[in-house]
Image: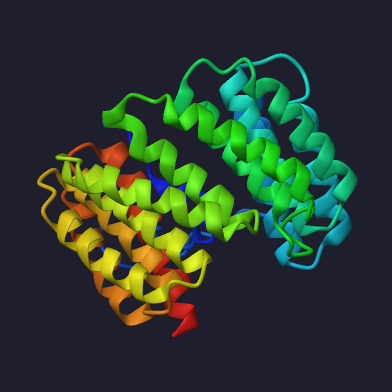
Length: 317
């Protein structure tokens, strides 16, 4: 199943930098290690091998600068990131980075740049062959077009409706066993675009598709995605029920790395619904699974993701 880590859509994964808890495991920072300066982070970002990776790294630095109060520096870094993906490249990778850039420009209320980034992203979307990736780009763009929050979107209902209809059409054409991932993107896009009726209709489809999945990680992530949509449209009770189902599925995953990611996905949505205690408990289970990952590089990545999320939640206790 190709259902990717859905929490990539979620705000907890948008935090700048990686904060690791000082506990055992390959993913932990060495004692006394110093955080990179902004200059060093910028140099590291520019050293990435491809323009889309450079853009992703630069946007991460821009968020860190913005959070630290360096407004002008953040804007300059974001513009540099944007410029990286204006030329020729892989349609799916460039489109996703352009959506990321649009999200940041929305955050700093630069509506002109939001529109330009989304226009380019939609242009690339026409060339994306993979229907799931195409759906994700269209749905993410539609969500930004329609979002009424000043620092999250453009409140352009006309463009949102047109873009979301495209996303829904592409999602409906995805092969059935892969459709949950596409439906998750569409349902969340509708929710973010301020279209709760359409979001509700899609989340019903998503739930049906999720429950039909046999692979437990895919099922856990799809159910968590459905719960997230219910949160967005103020259906908390439905979200809580789905999260219980998602947690059961996540805990049944046998492979350590997959179990860690499934638990992480469920934990993040559990935190979003306001149950920090339960979310932290799930993250502790995810951390145990992450420590059992055999491949050192993969272990480092998953441990870092789990512990950075855990650190953010610990701050909110």
